[in-house]
Amino acid sequence: MLTPPLGAAAIAGLVPHQGSMCLLDRALSWDAAEILCATDRHRDPANPLRRDGMLPAVCGLEFAFQAMALHGALNAGGAQRPGFVSSLREVALEAERLDDIPGELRIAATALMAEAGGFIYRFAITAGDRRLLHGQAAVILPREDAPA
View 1 (tube, rainbow, N blue to C red):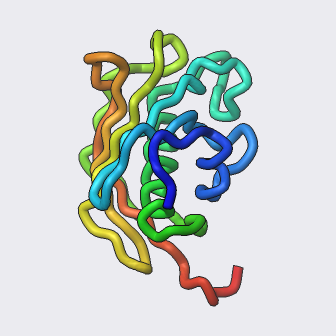
View 2: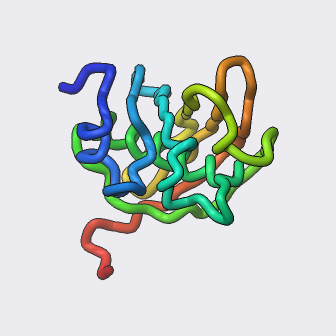
């Protein structure tokens, strides 16, 4: 059984995102219902989500999706298989960009529903006392025996 904190290498072994697309530095805490992660990768000039010299705040959704995938993997006791975002609700961007945010980002995700076929989470990304974005996402996980 894994215990917090988890570093980037352990996270990469549990989420479908690899290489520079694995955006989480650490999983700070988790339980059956929620996870809290941290990262500094929003300021990395080589972040693969950067466009035109900046990282738009909407890219924070990918940080949240990865926290959700990691939480699912930790609860399942093994790597999370790739899924597809099926809906976003009540997403609010409270910043224009992330690359100019000093310090680390904290990514919190709370499971509202999780089962073999998918999950629904509420999420929030903060830096210090500032909330940067939040909302709700649903992800569908294809059956393991489904053709690719």
